[in-house]
Image 1 (cartoon, rainbow, N blue to C red):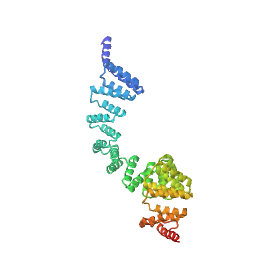
Image 2: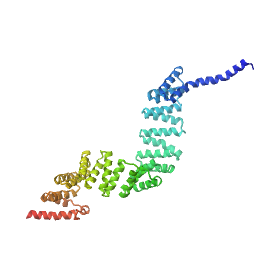
Image 3: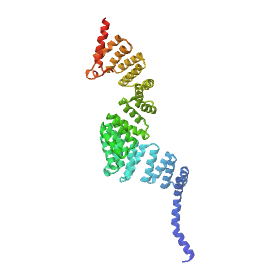
Image 4: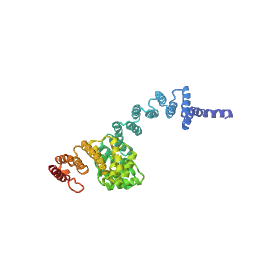
Length: 431
């Protein structure tokens, strides 16, 4: 073969490759700009090439991706929609359209496109999972679970699917179904902390506290330094009225660095229930500092403080509780009664009497308050005749099964003391 003919033969072989390279070059240029995060330049370059041929699907896809990366969602959607005009079944473009609708805050349209993709690729689990997640993100748990259940039936070995179904049923307040799928998930991936924690919460909510504690103990045998599970374990002990164990578990949380309101509050309550008020005070105060709107913690801070002889501190927090909210009748009555005790302790008997009357007004069913008002008149204010009607009202409203067992510090029952004082005061009046 002569030299000119050989050169011509080589050129003929190279021409298709050169042509393909020229066709690939614009796409590669745009991709290169996007890889270096020059999204605006990439979108502009793509537009220049599209001026020559506006139907290039790959270029429209790249333009849309570049615009979306630059948060120009409306323009990105327009580019993807234009790409679909030439190929309405292009799953790659449709999937990017789902993403941009989701990112732009239009989940309804994202779900519509998600269903279209699921119809085009029914065997692809990813698209069904994406659809379920879209429903979950807008708190449409009923539709999310309808998408997930067929996936679980076709393959029950997926931890994620079992967990998500459990999450959906949990949100739908279908506790039994949630428990079932959480337990299925834990069979696939034992000791997952998030699923274990949710399962424990469900058992607590169903008042199956012993089962909840068992789950926590099983997990802690594998991971003894998990603060979330330790907290749940401590709370379970608290609900089971084992306050020593509750305090032990929650103290371990603090040793590991936990200073959350929950831990501090229930540590305080665990000691409060054991009447260790001086130990409870710092935990309640720490909990209150983390949330100064919590009237309950404020109340227990005040009660624990004055019962541990920090009278001034106790009164500050009890008075602050009143300013935080208007509680229910029983809670308000208890608050007034505690404030009355605190005022009595510092010699403000008149103020204490007014607070006891407010406590009785807030909760007329608490008969013991009638005795306390009478006793306040009789013992602290030296006005036995004014206390006499309250003594009599106390006896009139007495429920022997419960209140006959309430004793004064001298171990004399309220009823016995009342009957004795009525006789004494009435006898004094007759003389």
